[in-house]
Amino acid sequence: MPSLSRDEVAHLARLARLHLPDDELAHYAEQLEVILGAVAQVSEVAGADVAPTSHPLPLRNVTRPDEARPGLGQEAVLAGAPASEEGRFRVPRILGEEA
Amino acid sequence: MSEPLSSEAAAEVVRLTASQVAAAVESGAVSAVEVAQAHLDRIAAVDDDVHAFLHVDTEGALAAARAVDERRSAGEPLGPLAGVPLALKDVLTQRGIPTTAGSRMLEGWRPPYDATVTARLKAAGVVILGKTNMDEFAMGSSTEHSAYGPTHNPWDLDRIPGGSGGGSAAALAAYEAPLAIGTDTGGSIRQPGAVTGTVGVKPTYGGVSRYGLIAFSSSLDQAGPCARTVLDAALLHEVIGGYDPLDSTSIDAPVPPVVEAARRGARGDLSGVRIGVVRELSGEGYQPGVEARFREAVELLTSLGASVTEVSCPHFGYALAAYYLIAPSEASSNLARFDAMRYGLRVGDDGEHSAEEVMAMTRAAGFGPEVKRRIMLGTYALSSGYYDAYYGSAQKVRTLISQDFAAAYDQVDVLVSPTTPTTAFRLGDKVDDPLAMYLNDLCTIPSNLAGGAAISVPCGLSDDDLPVGFQVMAPALADDRLYLVGAALEAALVDRWGGPLLDRAPALEGASS
Image (cartoon, rainbow over all chains, first blue to last red):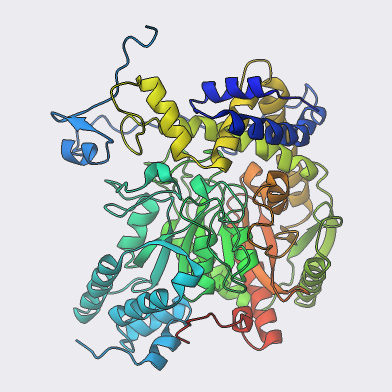
């Protein structure tokens, strides 16, 4: 059974961009360990000769004709934005994060 | 303008099947507006108790119904479902109508475009009543993981209606709509169908467009019809199915003749049909009343001329484990788009926090516990050092399950099993026990992994007087076989019961009928 420490879950949460308080980290560590224990059996089933299936259909690239056609207007696009300014998306600062 | 329907007439209208509604509208026996109003009134009367809907679009529904009536008055031909009300799962976009996928993350979002399914419904004159409740981002088996509170099972309001499409199934069972749309990633159409005594179909993967479906697990998600009868499900399947150039995984092939198959099945002759009972989908963990109704249904199919054999699918026992690695892995990727930048919720944007901090704070505030659990599980399964043991191995199991199906379909035309191991459990019973919750999808997951088609049809009541579902599975693009066998079983059972199973549901508090 895989073991999962609180610190490892904190690392996972960071990777997944989830800001979780300590009590939630401990709770998820306990639950994820149980779930991973139950699903770990998949590694015992198939040998190296079995090809993986990522998708039930064979995938192919699909393109449409390169023709200009109307898209959504600026107003429609920005209507769902958390914040906008001067007709553009306004986002929090991305510079100086390491400061 | 005609007089409003009397309460007795409205009570009769909401109990009509979709095909009966369409015929009544086409003949002029009732107007589409009267039908829509009767269902809106029914929703007003019972939905405080059921909570099937997150949003009811009264104005839009009445406008769509008026358009159908005007077309009829002008002598224009109406399609097979014109004027029929429908409840749309909140994971499919509808232009201008709040769409949340059951999450706080999208609260208040109004999509600027229609999903292809939505567009096809509108083009067919189907009257969309509103958006139905669901587990957040379709993750769950009970609709308790909705950010907006649970839906209640119309058979017993203290029990779950299944998930994630519990709202869609409950709307049917509570006579709030004769048709609904669901999405099925691991059983989210069929399992709610089973526990509410309604019909749910997962079409072949790629058979119904996913354009405009808010993605959970892209290689598994499939939109499909929910109805109270097999024929109604088939009529809806033909409206929403078919190739869509906007979805790169859409199959460029005609929709199988599902309506014709449902009508043929209802005549009750299954001579020449080979049915396989999946050995691995019974036994320990299955409620005795569920197994008993399943066995009786198999005997009934035999009496209709089908040949029945037992078939082994040895890797089905690993399907649940593979699913709970593959689906969270894809979810962790798909849900990365909810980053508080371009749409959806934003938390902590006070000038003090960086974009990365705002993302993490927003995602922590906007996602519920089940979604966070699956995002972290998927992140783990895809991370360096664990990828091969978890995600890679799960994809190999997927291959083995597809091979099991292929070998089985060499012997039989369809496979059958109970849809769920148990009937509806009580609200709150499993919400803190993810593994117990996941077991509900034991029988439904294999066909999602392999991409085939499957249906759940009501097959009676268990010893606790709650509905039991009978699952029929068919190979990809052989969806018509589901309807043939499902309709034959339904007709035989309705004949035996003297009416539909839903007639036995206890009347709802506040019901108008």
